[in-house]
Image (tube, rainbow, N blue to C red; front, top):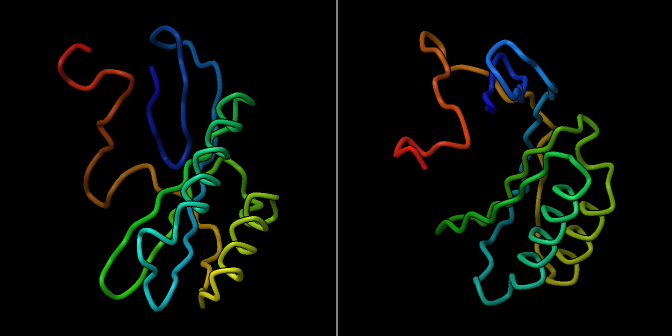
Length: 131
């Protein structure tokens, strides 16, 4: 079972048995003006490849593109507080420069374990349908 508690990702095999705990960090790139979807193929590939590499190395790393009318965002969640001090970030930033895209990047922020006044209830891998 996996659950997020107080900014820590807890993985356990049986109730009361804790196997690993990971802090999660999130940061984002904001690209203005927004980029057309067809120009973002290399970025999509970089994100997909890094997620696969992380999974194979027992790390947590996920990147997503969010296309909005005012900006394009690249959202990243990782178990590494160093944030942008990784080859993937240099590759993403090189591709953004190649696209001649203006961007800003947030500092990594700890992912909160619960919303104010509410407990975090989601657990995985079940999707609620017993699957």
